[in-house]
Length: 183
Image 1 (cartoon, rainbow, N blue to C red):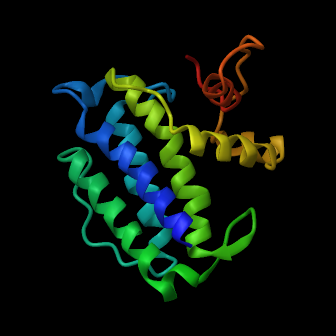
Image 2 (image 1 turned 135 degrees about the vertical axis):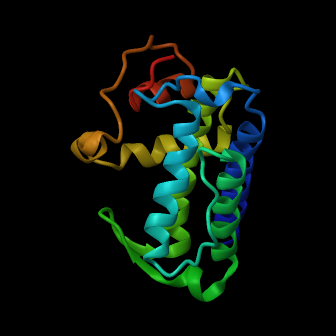
């Protein structure tokens, strides 16, 4: 479990650095996600994560409005999920997802850390920050994406159609293109 906690802290910490680094006026910049701004990227995470995990027994304090304070909204969600990961009973609780039933810690690792990882690039691109993704997590995500059937990956609009890139593109470019991200 310590690997999961370490990975969560590292990846969400990188996202937090991008959230804190959004320049004045940058929250309304368009993101690589169709019809989303930088603020919408943070709003997505600060809505679905509490929505899903409250139903699993995680108690969230009031999350500030992403319209008023996107930094505080994100940090509230990040801290609350981090505490859930360090609660042995909560972290071990079985959670059913469309992919499998596993512990809450494993579910957080799979869906929260993975989503935050990908949206780190989106937020960085939207706000002119360093868009380099964590190389260790990149390798884990490349492996994980290969295990998800194509129809499951693309259903529900979660990811767009894959984008063609040159064969000699770097791993990050290939990963993002597979998820439908335009560079």
